[in-house]
Image (cartoon, helix red, strand yellow):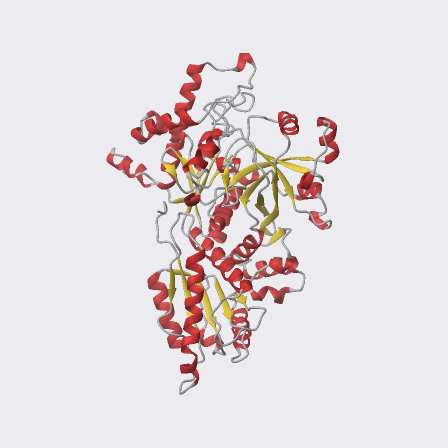
Length: 595
């Protein structure tokens, strides 16, 4: 079940029709309603929320032939909690009379490509109406002509419907939720300077700030579930193998001190969960205010340096929260950023909402050219890594799912939504992770960092929101793959940085031109020190979501054929990326004010 307060959003389907009676409307009733039912089935059979619930689809009680029918549909959708609108039709309709006019609802129109009735003509008229009214809508129109009685949904149409719905539901799920900032700005990282106006104006998300001293108060005053703590500590001792201590002998801590640190980081994990989403057990203990949480859909922990110079780091907390399992079993991953990098948390959240899977948080740390690898290891890079690799590595919040010990139906390494993960796969993820003591030079207060490497070759998409003065937010997207280097090569490269941290070797898909000329250029053009990485090639989904939020995409390697934005974007020029910037500026943030 969802951890968040508020109903899950529903998808509404609006079957619109030619309103002329005495033969015309009557002849189209069944075909039009069947289109709506087919779209509803596609959505319900294919998509789920990240929390595991199925998507609920609401269809208008009648076909919509005019203003009165449209108003009745709008009233039903409001009562039912519909927050994503898909209009379908096989025929001509009265464009502005039957349209959905809610400015905050993501909307799309599917016009049936058939010759018997002018569905394409209506689609063009409707999209023109939406453009005139300043209500961007996605147009969906199949490439192939279908027969009048064909109730199937062509592949190209289904892809666009699902892409639109995934993006629309992501928008709806964020609205009204919170970003929980524990502490504030970390080590001068721009992304950890939480921009409350950006969160509200573009995502409809409120910023909630809690000083990290609150963790110490709750630890000292016992404001956490003590039974769960005992369970969590026992599970941690059994499943979280302490790794090699890389500290100098004089900096290494005693077993007693490490045991105390383990207890503290487990308590920190429980408390961060409670701060995000509350815990009814705390109310039973007499802590009513603390039991309510912050209704946080994402969060971040400042850590460095004020906390980590004094207390154990939150690497364990961040890694466990971002994983699809803990001592309570297999469950939905949290979205929780290290160093309180709010912009990376948002980017992680985008990936989580679109894929339902746990997310990686990494430094985009090092470009290794083939020549550099050969110089330091004596070995050549091969396969898809032959032209160079990027080292993704960070002390904190990369999910343990990124060990890639889960497998698909063919036995290949992968990452899955939590409901498809088996207990055996959880154990493999844990068994392939070690927890070395934190390096004292970085973390004077101690703690433990996860240490693993991502297995195999799996498709990945890295993205990042950046804020640019004078422009606002922009989104970067890079599709590519993880690669598993030979152990002797991995060890040499990994030992040159901090080997206590989890590593993913990443190869972006390059094109030979522009920002994707080669691997080095991708690294050089990346806009910040962090990246959010999701399993799968989801660049096209991210582009559609960004358009709904009015966030332009400044860098991506998605095929132009897969770029799907509202139809109004074509009015802003032929070049897709320039048009995206102009359209986003014209419409302004979804919940804010235009400049």
